[in-house]
Amino acid sequence: MSRHSHFAPYGDDEAAGNIFFPVLVTDQNTFSNVNRNETSLMSCCSRERTMELARSTKNVDGMLHDFEEEPPTAEMLRQRKRKSLPQRILERIFPPGSMLSSAFTLGSSTLGGGILGLPSAFNMTGYILSIILLVVVVILTVFSLWLLARAADVSGKRTYEDVMKVLMGRFPACMVAILMCGFCIGGGVGYIISIGNLLTPVFENPGVPHFLTTKPGNRLITSIIWLVFILPLCLPKQIDSLRHTSLLGCICIFFFAICIIIDACQYTSEHGFRSELEMFGTGNHAIEGLGMVMFACLVQINAFEVYYEMSHPSPRRMVRDSVIAMSGSGLLYILVGFFGYMRFGKAVTDSILLMYQPGESVLFAIAYVGIVFKVCVAFALHQLPMRDGIYHLIGWDVYLIPWWQNAVFCTFLSFVLLLAGLFVPNINIVFGLVGAFCGGFIGYIFPSLMFMYSGDFTLKKKGFLLYFSTYFLMLAGCVAAVFGTGASVYGVAA
Image 1 (cartoon, one colour):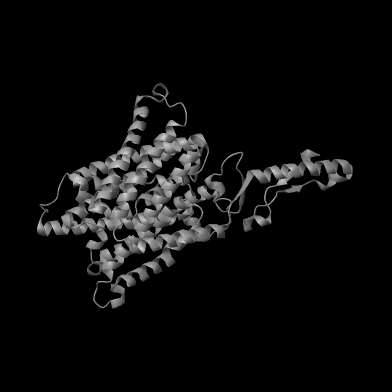
Image 2: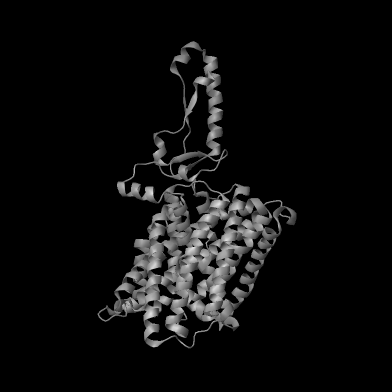
């Protein structure tokens, strides 16, 4: 009797995104040869089995998955619906969970508003010391991503907070959630400020209505950009849904870097190399630039989402994809930071966007439009881990709650960040503070602690290089959190 029975895996309600019980399908010819007692017993057993399946399953984007047996893969998370021809072509070239998808999502996570403050960081720290810091931070970032992947495999969890809870307990997990929210709030506020900075030189052209040249006018246009472009990108549940916009955003940043290089070379050929450029900065300003460099390279906030949405997640693949992402991002950081500093020298003390007049150059006009788009994508990528952190604190599961509930909550978060960004005066204040303090913990201290608590962390079993590299990563995070935050606070007070 039992060998003729099976569970129909999904029904028509699947597309509606509802959690439902599997339907028991039986061979109709068998019922004529069995008595009612056997049928009743079978129904009772099937009901118990159905309840067990329902308790152990979760509805992920309209698909039912058994989370007790194995976590859902990127293929399972993909919605199985007929797509248009352009969508199918893009998925063929740029499939979900692929190496390019993961690399560009990681790259887009780090290539955001942080790059706009790097010329100012080069001014504070000196261009030679800044390049050294960027190289070191990129290497440490790749290493920390490998540690996070190892910790994810040991814990079997899908978010930063859940991995920390399994390995170290509830209090450290709550601390991670709070710091993650703090960092993402700072990043989101910084991106809103960046949009306002983008609009400032545009509205300085003659012929622009006077209202748009005022602060209220700037805030109005910024709010419209948030409503039309940023808000729709904040609503998806999965980070892989933004892979195409991430690719386009990286291309926009690359084009902006080319424009800065061309303008700096033209200026240098006419006026020569600036004499006030410093190779090594000194004093508090040099340490203050460290926080901005760390903010620019902090990609760990999206590490677990990217890792579990890979087609075949493994620490080795995480290293491969992160090397591609961070090498390209680090090179762009060095180019934008150095050539932006070479072009404006000591005059660049805030976002590089305030130093150009896009109305005077077609290239920069195109680049400014691209930067607006890239900032919108970066805002959405920063809000996803903030959402996960808050969900962890209140006990929600992003894969279980209805789409509309997630959309309403994300809309509220995005609106709060918009209001904060409209009234914070300086982008360096935000990037310096959250980059040093939150970045030191999220990017360096917590990944090293997770790996230590994953088990068998001894010099004999891990080896000299891995053992002391983990401690060095934690020490670097402590230095950044203490001295970088102190320097940023001192700079704000001064």
